[in-house]
Length: 102
Image (cartoon, rainbow, N blue to C red):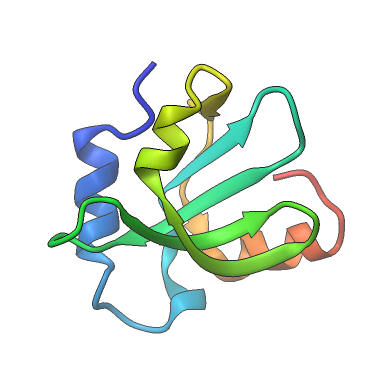
């Protein structure tokens, strides 16, 4: 399965310069099938197709950048959640920090 689809990329690039981070939508969720890490994609630089920004749940919940090519290089271990429905970043952040499953 492809991590990045054309539709996901278009949504993420569109949000790169829009609004406050927590008001943006998380447009995709990636996860480590053999571990507990998760990456929630909010936006992506259209000029640098590798630079992504979002929420990362690893040892703790953080906001920051990640590399889509690095995630792709770990395929099939890193997968995209095909059933994830876009939701406000604020809601994802709050759920993760409460220990709820997203």
